Image (tube, rainbow, N blue to C red):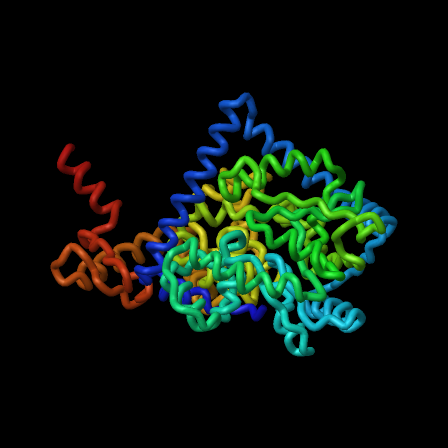
Length: 477
């Protein structure tokens, strides 16, 4: 997927005034935020301790990241022993190359997919279609945005920016059937269309929520039955998973599964939790004859041992964006790449380079709602602050950021010279009073016009704080 995060400011401005989008985001926020709050409250009321569980989740993820090579080797050994083939991909291009080679090796003409953010990173659908392999998304949200030729706007609800009328238009256009607007009828129509793809596909492609090292298994967590159809009906199953997704044991999976659905959708457990191990045995009635794991770096390994390693704890629940006031104002597409919200504001600059996403570290209020709800306690505001520091240290940023740095250096110089500072503030306050033209608000500040583009600046009295303080002291004396 093309990185367009450099366009963040323009995209954010356009979406912030989109009333239709605001309504959709508000509805979704009520469902996600309220659902999580109720799920956590129920867990605690039933004798659990969600905060303690978050600490356990953080501990599991940290244990893995501190010994990532060991757990990946363990996974590879156990997966291979159960008939799977483990491959390694450095980047998105290598993901696509490996999947295309697998498809050609097995004579694949059609692939069906369960939701995978890593395949979005790689632009996998386009790569398959370029060699004549049809690639069909089967998650309903992903299927909708595939018809619309749009990227996902949320990691667990990819079509959150669409309402049912827009979906009805898409279905009418692509299914060539009478337009329906009842949700039950629309979902049935989608099932009927997708059913033929399920039974005719040669290859299934999935992501993976977790890789279990002790069994060589991949865990898939979904709310639709498509994941099981994708992994059991085709003769070939390819799981494309980030290297950081490995966990040591099934006990660890059980702990993380208490965190993931409650944080993501407010459910005690998702509708479908699948643990897939090895290829189809002689006595099995279904399952793939060939199972491939493609374990992906694409920027992840470089974070191990760095000051940003904590970001690799992420279990992709989406809670941070559900609670983020910035995401809830502008939606996911404004961020310009696969991952939106606070997680995307950290991951995109780290994975693709700060020069390609210079505004994302600043796309946050640092209110810490994201950090409070993160199930594995990633300190997202702290990581965003570190990225901002890195921008200052490296000089990577927009022209505006560079101008701000020059202005702050000038201010710092003046602040170290009290007489110069006092003289400058006297000039500035009188200039601002003159600029206000007798009013109590300044509508445009010529030095920083963008700041006053959407707000007025309070006009000063024309005197500095020291002058006003001295006047008050004189009156009292």
